[in-house]
Image (cartoon, rainbow, N blue to C red):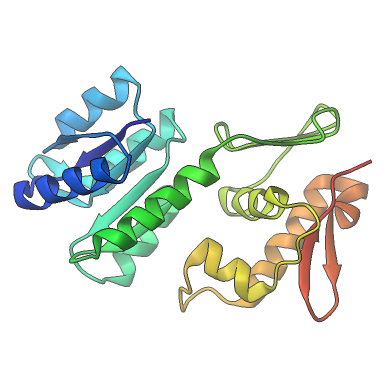
Length: 219
């Protein structure tokens, strides 16, 4: 397990690197995009903490490049609480974001969360497979076409079959209470996931009226 920290603020990275190491997360630090690209190409990185602004370019450019070749978890650091930066980062494929200055404990919690979500989760291998590494879902050998947001929602539900998730809980888990994302968004994604799963969709992602949604492995 190794975390790559991409940031040119030496005081911040020194503190963060020591903190993560003390918490059981080995890491290394690079100060620019060139170092980030080299580290990503070399492999062995399990997650990336990425600053949005770097001396040799834009962190968003690296995020875009990384998503072409890898689904490695990426937590984006923004220098300001700008909604546009956060939304663009999420749309480009960031798994989470945090505005500077931040509490190291919160960063650690968010980092551990994206690492948990990246672990392979296979449910009923002969029927339905949810693979976070490739963002691929298959049912009876057929690839199920889902967007990144739809995949994330299905992966959360599939983590604990039978658990009832309220819309509010799903919003908090997936979007951390973003004001521009509503409970209606969850309903729309669920409808599209069911459509993509086909005839069994409503049996796999079930509605509990007044409570929310739950996942049931296909039989």
